[in-house]
Length: 219
Image: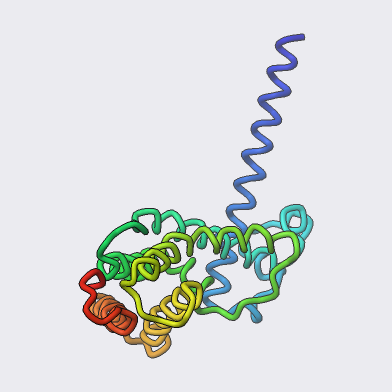
């Protein structure tokens, strides 16, 4: 009897591994297709053809290609959030920490291109209800340390700005992503360090713009 229970457990574990592997394959091939053709041009049949499984297998894992897209986006957000753990929101020198943030986003673009484009470049379909809370939570986690960094700067008078920290973080990220996206869309990526330099230059300009007169904690 005990042997039968062990065999049943082994079979169940193997099935779970196989299911996880199929799901990962669908996500990986979908990323490749979305980047190569654009989200709207890719059909579920295209994804099924790429993974060499039928529609029944696809629908056993996902309800739609929109759900696939946002699972990819969620994975990217969680990865980026982990990178931001090195940012010290209590640091006196906010300028150094914001430069660190710019480097993190650049490295994410350079080393995790599939995730970067899913998050910052491709048109974003409507988020399925089942994933809305998870994505919102992941985005909050990713923004938490830069947000707290700016809040601390405001609290001690190092920043002079009427905008709330949430708006500052939004402006900072969208501008950095805009710089990177400009290089992508104009096929001007042969010198990646030039792209990084543009991001860091913008970060320095941003810091200068929000710094309180006479403050030395931002530079």
